[in-house]
Length: 121
Length: 179
Image (cartoon, rainbow over all chains, first blue to last red; front, side):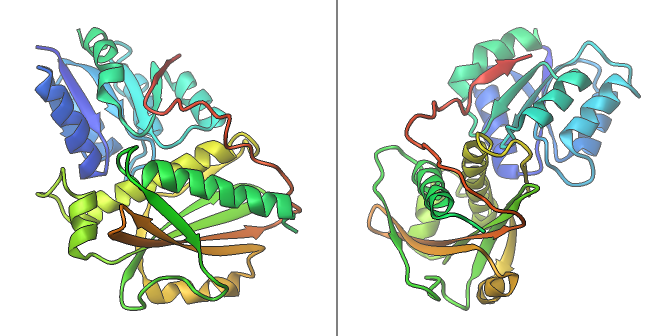
């Protein structure tokens, strides 16, 4: 089964999002920051969708995306940002880095489940 | 430097964010009462959660005071009993400040928001040292039993004048915007 990687420094958000996706039959792994996310992605080539926060310690989410596309040369994985950030400048940076979509928290699972399923298939 | 329209706007934006994000269910009663000058509504022995929103023309500091008593813990951590209360509460405060940030972006496109952090409540009395152009504290009561307080502090670096219309903004949080 294709895997989804949830990257967030808040265990509350990680548990909420990962728990919801698992309850709906999806295979989910988690990472605590961008650095951890990058390393999990290197080790698990089966990951099809990354759902990531922006502001995190050690490595932020947008830097992680830039490294996924650059250092890892992985243009196949879909990345969606899940964040309280909603500034046009931040979204532009995400778009330029190859982010596929943007969700402003709070997470509303039912509103995005089908889209996540498609992106992870 | 901060016009009365702008002060009212910060107040309305805070109230809307607190009512929509600190109250976990839309049916929950969230009463917000202004406190007098110098009152913060906080116990000096407790902790506060602090977040900042910064732009070129101002820095807004949102301070949320809480006591980790049984009713507060039961309300905010009811679906996450296995996690530390502070971890859960920090994320709720993050959502509250995020809602303010989202509203303010309509008037100030250059905003950046911090992650939440915890300080001792004694720090709040030093906010005056920042010489804020707007400083306002509120008592917040949810469902009659959960008691919080919040302080909004805005330091202006240039004249600020805007009128926030918080009634017309469409709620788009949680929706996936495709690029």
